[in-house]
Picture 1 (cartoon, helix red, strand yellow):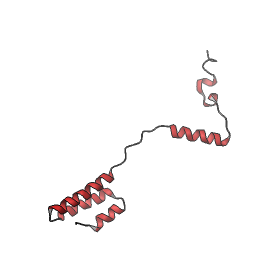
Picture 2 (cartoon, rainbow, N blue to C red):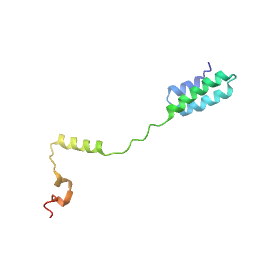
Picture 3 (tube, rainbow, N blue to C red):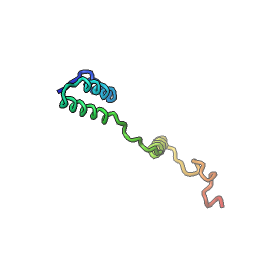
Picture 4 (spheres, rainbow, N blue to C red):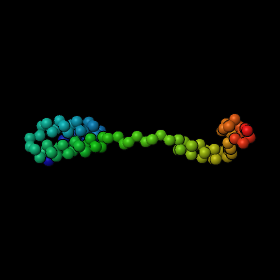
Length: 95
């Protein structure tokens, strides 16, 4: 089996793109097809690990929950007029 100390060290450090590049260099030096296939599989694993997770959609639910928890912990009681909605009046009072 083809082994490369530097590529394995890069994998252990989580430097997947650099490890994949190193495996490509090692593949160029391989002499047999089975060696190249094993190295190619190892490189594919590195490239798969290098993919970033899908970007999380931004929502403000967590922020809203954190604000509400902080306000509750502080003992502050708020209602709609404290948030400045409807100019301090409820919709029925404004008519």
